[in-house]
Length: 230
Image 1: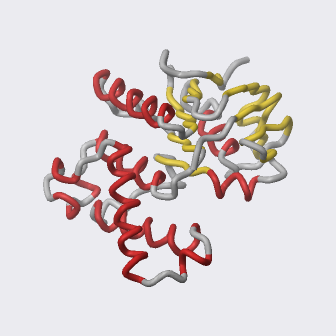
Image 2: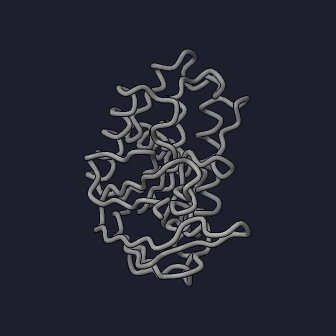
Image 3: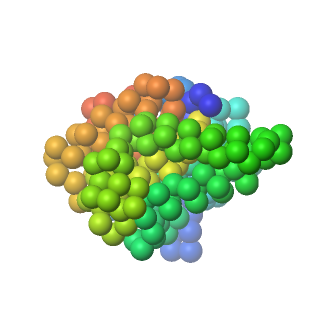
């Protein structure tokens, strides 16, 4: 699936404690890298969730491809995938990398694929699942042979960059048109942060539209949205 354009005008979300964010305007074409920047607690994660159809906007409008938010949030969820979002995409530290990948592929096959795909022989479905996992790992830059126990490595034993790449790979299994990645600079060194931004840039260059949340953003972004402004 190719990327989608993302636009917003006076976009905002209000919660029980007031505005999570408001006044966001954005105009990015398909295959863009969109940096959402702002301090922790400024509503940047809420903006990512709203743009991926997982949080309902309170004011303004946004479009993801031909879909309008908040009216078509369910449809937006089908073409988007979040990664590394606390409380939404948490990894189970006791499960292995392979278990996470196989579980996500199975969920995608059951709930994300067409009825026709589900009716294919199980052997064909297994091959397709394996190919999806391989493509997602390659795109996320996560080599299983570099892990301590390969696919049998438990999530608790992953380094922070590896854990982030795994979360991205899991999101990519569904081949989303819009990928939202939270906290891309959390607990990373400067070199690791640069590598992750290079990864997200490469995903955008390959056609997937990427929304990435961080404290400071990056010069590699095609478009920016800043939360927490007065």
